[in-house]
Image 1 (cartoon, rainbow, N blue to C red):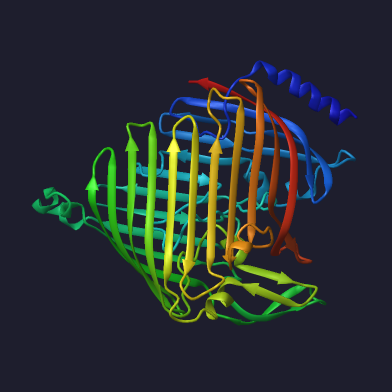
Image 2: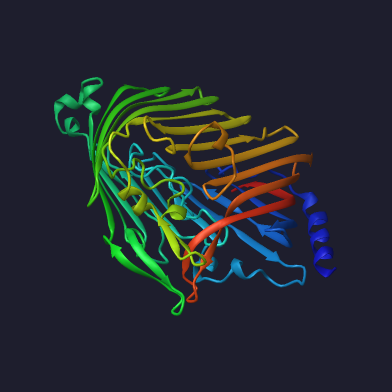
Length: 447
């Protein structure tokens, strides 16, 4: 009863605040977001209090993310703060610059990060679960004639690392002023996963010791890549890029991809980004190996049936002649909606479909809020497309704004929760359902 009263008082207090949510603040702006409500986690009710302020001043930005979940007895849920990184992850991110700026640095949660053309690291997410949030780092620097992109996924333990260096060789000569050809770009990528389970191919679970014993392991998984890109059109409104990538997974196979990428910016009102890619895959090769599901797919242990699955094992079993297509599309009408979709399908592999969908319909002056996200891997056919299982992630929110600064919504998550061994090490993930009636506010401000 005391918790319910506190939540009610918080809701009354926030009626003096205004704003929008989930919109990264522009320079010298910020917003303070907070809310309270009930959340059902695997069918069990919990009370939630959340605070999520973000501020951007000049090129710097900071975002916090504090969620407190209490059970019906008023006890804080264990998974909220059972690791040191859970305390650090209250700082959601610290940022300098924005993606595609000459200098971009971000420390914290890394949401759907892509390196280069995305044929090695594509929409990688270092925190796919609420209960095991991670702190990572992105650092990109463009000097004009050359530069680099880099990512490190998890400071708490060994994990994903990737770096791509690139050079525009003609920029060092007078030929750099030639239209089209002067912007030719050559790149080289190195990506690896230092996690101890990155390349597990065989092993068994020792129930007496409460741990998994590996019997075949190829060590750190490394991928080397080389690429060439040519911006055929490059202006303030339109960019048309042709590219070709070659990648080799150490101790496994290799693959190539050729594609075209189009970006349109309609006077700052409408943005469109589209990519179509043809992939040529040899045996023992998976394109975009480090994807949005990688942290889930890397290694899963079933202690009941004494078996496991790993992405390296799936890689080992990939056959030959698995060419295919990949495409994505982003449409953004500023102030109205964002829609993003991506899909992969290989020619001769029935379970090769990978789908990513995102939408955000929350007009600034409107009264309706609709947000949704859906990821699925290993899709076999149309019937399998939207079936929720251990290959799926779903987020939906439908809300109404009774006041410009107050949002009442219902949130549904099909996500994952970590499974742990006797030493509290994460051995895999299992699906988790979260249903959350939510009332929250946002207070925007200028510096």
